[in-house]
Structures are given as structure tokens and as C-alpha cells.
Amino acid sequence: MAQGYTWGGEVPCERLPPSISVPFLAVSSYLELPPVATYAALNLLNWRPLSDGIDLRQPENLEALHTLSGTDDESWFYVISNAMEARATPMIEMMLSAIEAVDREDSATVIACLGRLRVDLASISRLLERMDERCDPYVFYHHIRPYLAGSQNMEAAGLPRGVFFDLGNGKGSWRKYRGGSNGQSSLIQFFDTILGVSHKSSTFHQEMRTYMHRPHARFLEDLEAITNIRQYVDSNPELSDLVSSYNAAVSSLSSFRDSHIRLVTRYIILPSRQVAPNRAGSRVKNLAAATTQVGSHGESSQAYVGTGGSKLVPFLRTSRDETLAAKVNTNHETA
Image 1 (cartoon, one colour):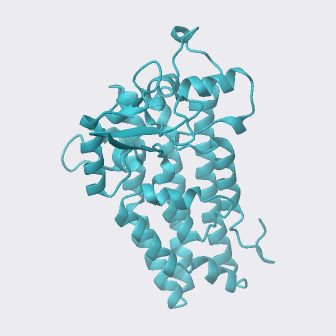
Image 2 (image 1 turned 30 degrees about the vertical axis):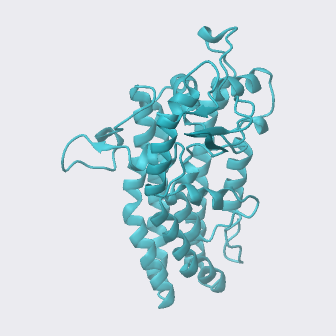
Image 3 (image 1 turned 90 degrees about the vertical axis):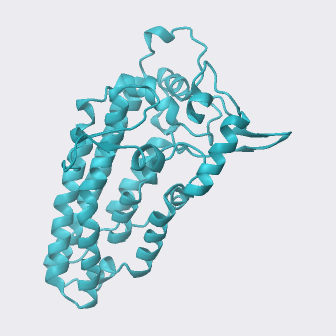
């Protein structure tokens, strides 16, 4: 409701009335989530299976409870990620067992877990590539994506001061939040943490934890304290099978990020270069309009801003490159 109120008109509305602000802030506080469209709200808390006992790893078996656009495209956009989460669930327990295996110096188990991780990451990448089946890039770009935007770094989209949460009786405050982003998924950060991938070029990854379910964020913090797989691989360069298995898993995670970059190209960059027929001469101002202005002027992809408020393409490419940088180089294995 708040996203629709903010982004539903020709220009964004800077003020949320008390009838929305007060309950929204109360519910957000209870859920320990920021008052904005987050991955947790749009995906993790917003789905149902189409029948009992159905395979939750397949997106066609799921649907979103609520959408902003009323389209099947939007529901499909969400449940692709939900199916990825379901498919990855066994991987969490498996990689925790790999951590325990390191403590026992059980290299065979670590190698087996890394091999399985590589295969499962490839499976998740294939799920992401199914987005085209039921989510049209044009519909996503013009009718879904604008509503997912936050209020941070959204000056070009029409919110230079963020959004004012009016509490009534002359009270309230201006606030800026990042919008919904898959970077807020604890699953992606789980992969980074378990493989020892470091993202030191930006604080964005760490900031995204403040948009996660608190139990998920705390789990990642606890995981950071015990993760040991990369150190184990680095300390045993003579175990060529171990090094190869680790580097293959890292490459698989990097390939997943490549899939994400290709998705961004199809769903954001290419549509931004095509002005919607019904928007010619329009005064509509939102994330789609701002991004289309960038694309139609032929500006570099460096200028595109994601719904989370980050410089979209540079951020994704840097994350991919930092993933590859985690690979262990030895006489047995080269990057």
C-alpha cells in the first residue's frame, strides 16, 4: 500500500499519510524490518503453494499472495526467487557439515560437499534463467519495477528528500530506504560467507543485512565466526582435488552472478532504450522514466540505478569479480 501510494501517480508522492505511516511503522517494528518493500516482504512472506505436498523447488507450483501490478508476470518474478530459496535449503545443512569436516580434517567430505555445491549452484542459475517463461521484460520494466524502488538515491526518480512519514499532530520525519533487492536475500550472502568471498569494495552487502529478517542476519553473523573452508583449502595446496573442488564451486557462484547480469541486461538495460508508446511526451516520473532517460541518451550502463539504490551494473560486475578473486591459486590450480 505504501509503495503504491508513493509511486502510483504521475509523479511520486513524498509524504505518506498517518493512516499508512502509523500502522506501517508499527508492523515493520514488530517484524524487525525497515518500512519499505524488502525482499523479505515481497518474497519470503508473500507466497503460497498451489496445493498441499507440492514440490516447492519448482516455481510453477507457487504463486505470490499479493502483487502491486496484478499481473502474473510479477508473481512469477517473485516465486522464481522463492523456488531458489527452497532448492538451496539442503545446501545449508550440507555446507555446515563441511565446516565440521574441516575441523576433523576430513578432506574427502569437504570435497564431496563442494562438488555438490557446484552442481546445486548451477541448478539455481538455471532457475534464474527461467524468468523469461512468464515475466515479460516490458511488463517488468514499466509496470513492476517502478513500484519496487525505495527512497534512497532516488533523486532522478523524483524523491530528492526521501519520503516523509507523517505521524499526525505535526509529527513525523523524512526517511530514506533502499528498495527491494535480491541482495537482501540471506541465501546469496550464505554462499559468499561459506566460500570466503570478500566484498571489500563496498559496504552495500553488509548494509543489506539490515533489510533481512533478523534471524537470517544473525545466522550469517554466526556463520562468519565459524566459516573455515577457504582457509582450509588455502592451507592445503598439495591436496589438488580439494583445491579444484573449491575453485569449481567459486566459479559456479560467479556464473550465477553472470546470469544475474544477463537478466539485468534483458529486463532493464534493453527496455530502457525503448520509450513506451503510451509514454511519449508523458510527464510520468518514476524509476522507469528516469532509467529510460539514461538509456535513450545513450549513457553508459554505469549510470543505471537499481531498485536498491546502488549503481546497478558496476555493483554486479564488481561482485562477480570479487567472487572470482576468492579462487585459490597453487601449482596445481590456476585461475
